[in-house]
Length: 305
Ligand code: RI2
View 1 (cartoon, rainbow, N blue to C red):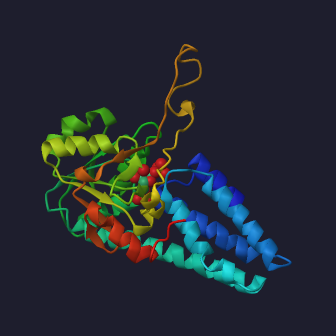
View 2: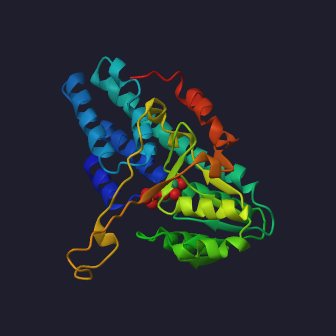
View 3: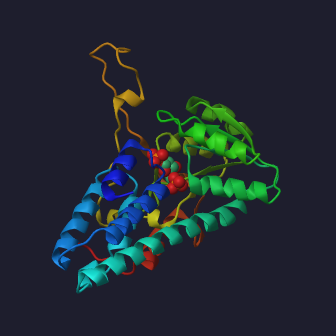
């Protein structure tokens, strides 16, 4: 897919999930570098920066998209000619996709160790990282049961239950409002992440913070899965995460409401660090308090700009 097609698919949520949109954006830039010809390096740079903006404008919340593009464009400024820049963009894009897939696989192995034989798990939305932990635990012979929320309004929970059922996992769909009722049956909550801020706050699908509160009340461990490229270094210097608001048509059908009724459809929320027992990354399970250290390790010295 080219950049325009990828940006549209991300906007429409044909491509969705923070990791998948990151890989799709990196691939789109790689494809552009592979297929497009430029007369000089300045035109190439200008076009790639336009592509960057198009991709970044597709969805605002998941920092994985920003970090994937940052990784893919790294070093472009120093390229002396078109050939060098094309090779760099193709290589960076392939490296990112490979590292991203490997990160999800590692998270699966590490996170699965936190799932005990006989556990009942609650998950929310459709996170490839969280589901990988569950699948690995099941493949390793652990007898587990999963409750998955419907995850209104887009209902990614339907994807989740079908994906887990296909693996032969005992899975039950619940509506989002049933979370507190089922919490007494749950041994561990495992969710994904779109963005992790410098103070360990996790931004994930709307409703995640309710799971965290209910888990906290019931003393059930609340575990977040996130590749390290879900960490937002911009939040260290005061940037806040934009919470995406989507079309009201995702909630109601035409003509269902009186015209004076307003609709508010935020699709992500924030879960403060104090409700999170651990963040499973590809480099290990870390506390939300150690996000800054990882940020520095991962991105090098972070400069204020
Ligand atoms: P992985 C999704 O967002 C959900 O919020 C999910 O928890 C998160 O991305 C992470 O998914 P959306 O694109 O990267 O469905 O773990 O709005 O697949």
